[in-house]
Image (cartoon, rainbow, N blue to C red; front, side, top):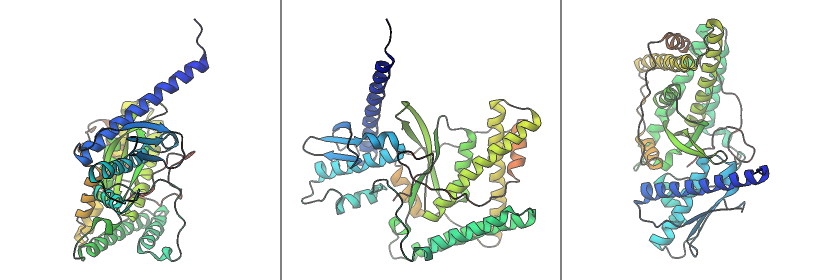
Length: 379
């Protein structure tokens, strides 16, 4: 019997949509368990064609709708945030019965803040307001970028000095922020403007060099990170994405370091492969892991020098609170160990020679037609 290609494509589309709805049901169950201790009954979860809102809880029908546009054209992290917001609306409606509560009123905002859920839907970054260029965060990011520009210098000593000075400025900035927060009578995680970003493209599996880079961001760039499961509706498969949480200035810097380190490691591997005629994926994975290990070793040595100068930064407990609110059931996974092979050792030596250079200007956000960019800040 001859198969009609158009009918086959339509049938597959139906299958993928059914898988997507099933995945949304699984995510709802996880949110209900993690955030609300199983207090809610599962509603009818369905997809809708409406462009706005991107998600909607209907109490009369006990239905929770997610826009197809959101599910198919946005990062999966945005889908989860929309789903979380609508589950909060369901919780308010069915468990709190708050009288005269607006859809996204004070109770909604209070619960979202307590759970680390972003209250606004994704969209274009708002334009800068008058006077924002004078904000301390903007100024420190600008100064760090200028210092890193000097790291392009062909003079090795000058480049290293510029990179170390940028690192010193980052530590001072974060020590100042922590001091300001702790100077208040009641430290508030919301006061520190913590947010989140998702970095890179969803991957499966997460390789050792990915985990080592996440550890670098955690240990040296003032963010907390976690590998989160995501779903790719168009292909019906799962992956993982790196979420980082922190202050806006630190999110911007960590986003750059993540892209810079991956780009640099790939370039170094290409040069090594050409020089040695090594082409196997095993050698590639070992070499990339070695590069990240070498980069980590170099940053640790820089930190020891800065600590000798009295620049010691202690992780902010408020960041830990925000991070745990967003990831209440997180399990930590340590990097593996690809050491011992020749490719790893060569990669490690190359990683110790890396000098951090300035970010490449680019947009962020997600939406229809958007490329593999980081999410806008959450919070």
